[in-house]
Amino acid sequence: QVQLVESGGGSVQAGGSLRLLCAASGYTYSSYCMGWFPQAPGKEREGVAAIDSDGSTSYADSVKGRFTISKDNAKNTLYLQMNSLKPKDTAMYYCAANPGSLSWWLLLHPPAANYWGQGTQVTVSS
Image (cartoon, rainbow, N blue to C red):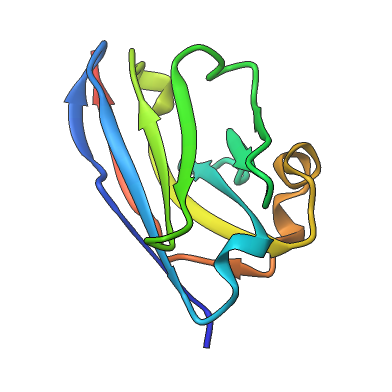
């Protein structure tokens, strides 16, 4: 049974940093494309960062230079380092996994992801 569990969210002031984690189990972690998809109230879920099975990464323009996605295959864990946070980054952040996708494709097609976590809330105050 595939399971994704996010953690690391919280409340910070603008300019601060947070590190999100997504612990994965139940599938061959290293062979999947994974990403982070925030969803703000009243808005659609969007892709901000994704990483291929081979480690290639893709980012939305809104987070380039501020967010870094990485993974540790030995620990089956996905990370999102978020720096220089802005109030507009406030959202529930979901981790997702999909077999065989390229990172740029998964970023643009969130509904296609096979597996989702329950989300972790990020709140950035001004």
